[in-house]
Length: 199
Image (cartoon, rainbow, N blue to C red; front, top):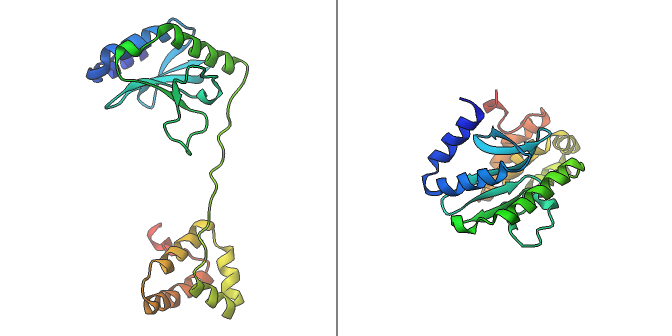
């Protein structure tokens, strides 16, 4: 099955928005964008760089621009569907076919193409990792044993987090103490709480 057939099959499955997606596709194909399929969906590229994609959901269909955060968006058409997660990507959502404005779409698409040709892009930011605070019961053990404190510090952030959550999730003081007794030798050996399940 070639690319065109794959996209036809994708659009055929979107019965509710089949006509609207076909219209969007025909508008996009009037530009220089090359049609391909990525992640099982129609994606359009220039110089092998992703520019936009089309898709449909339960209550809307639309276009997403991979570097939509760079677009001027003077008509306020774009939204960030995953606020706090995606920095660059923006969606233009529509609910009915009569909301498709060909002239305006072409303007946005041409701007996105031009940005790509000029090498403009938004670099994804690295997620900030927040290590939970160490429970007071574990801190007390560290005060009694510098070796334990150093061993804990040498663990990966993921392993530290597992131990912190393991102690924090205990409700009773006795349970916390029992858990501390259990994990102390594991920490000294440089092991993670769930290492035995990861092999």
